[in-house]
Amino acid sequence: MNQEIKVVFMGTPDFSVPVLKMLIEQYRVVGIVAQPDKPVGRAGKMSISPVKKVALEENIPLYQPVKIRKEYEEILALEPDVIVTCAYGQIIPKAILDYPKYGCINVHASLLPKHRGGAPIHHAIMEGDTKTGITIMYMDVGMDDGDIIRQKEIPILEEDTAETLFEKLSVLGADLLKETLPDILTGNVQRIKQNPEEATFSYNISKEDEKIDFMKTRREVYNHIRGLNSFPVAYTILDGKRMKVWESKMGDAKTKQPCGTITSIGKEGIGVATLDGEIFLTEIQPEGKKRMRAVDYLNGIANKESLVGKVLE
Image (tube, rainbow, N blue to C red; front, side):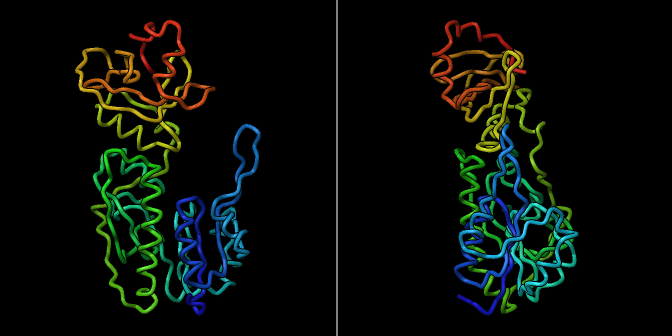
């Protein structure tokens, strides 16, 4: 453990936790910055973030500024030698970026300059990428446009979802930072400028992004569904009610039915027409009900054959 190096960590979700725990084990973490608590559910119960839980468990000073660009003096008062961010969720002001002796270091879940922004994992799957990875980078005033320090890639498997990729990349991020940070502290790193012409942007998922568009190909619909599993989850509309779709399977059958039409029901699930054939919805969650296999849903419908020919909106 390097107790001489004072670290401030900024992060919020589960993805950030492995990085934070590694830093606590290896360095002197003098402060943790997380997003403010937010109300969740219909009852509006306040929920604390995974990073805040770690801060409370480890008895490390915690800061939750509503707008960090205006509320950063307490953070600078900690006199950090290095600041590490990982899925924090706010733009860091220049006053903070310029302060630490060893800089502000970001752990980003993509192979920059591709997939800058807040939802790189979702978009990597939704866009059909075959690989992704972690980038350790120096932070700059722009969105994920700082100099690259080190990268490590992994394949995106056919069965990967956003959830499985989150888990893989969160561990990879902690491991790569553990390997890289000593070199940053000794100056034994090469700064690699990003090529802005190669940059793509993966902004946070909007409500509109969650809806399935069956006017696309089977592959595109399949990637869309797994790219939103397990949060926020893709959905479609059946009989005027929202139906979440957790998992699907590409079919082989060609169909001349209009896109979005339910073409078949059976052991494969609910077959739906897409631009180039059929896709089966295999795990769903009807409005007001629990997540279930599509087969079980169909078995609970008296006249399930009546679904065939209906159009999902």
